[in-house]
Figure 1: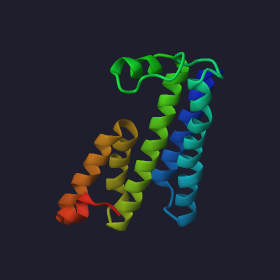
Figure 2: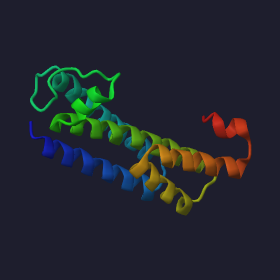
Figure 3: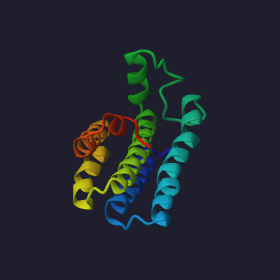
Length: 152
């Protein structure tokens, strides 16, 4: 399998989804398309590749199912071209999912788009840090612990 091509296609696809999330109108049809066509398609790509990769049905893996309970096992998986690519697709899918939640939630609580875009950039580039920044921003604005801690 051409892992460089898979990486490039999924990476560029995710970037397009992020640009739509950041700058397109937040109409229901667009957000639904981003959810299923963005996150759903990336997750499906991951699901279609991960089992054959780890079972050796396709080349580029680390030689079997790694031991995820050890750092060495995770390093073994991520040190192969297929493992690094599949790991990246995993990040892309979940970061976009979190970005969609942040955008929808920020719209619900009335945050301006100019304030959302830097937060979304942090979610894209640094995942959990972007989520923490948004949760802190939302907490400071609404100042309710239950509301800030338990998202809808």
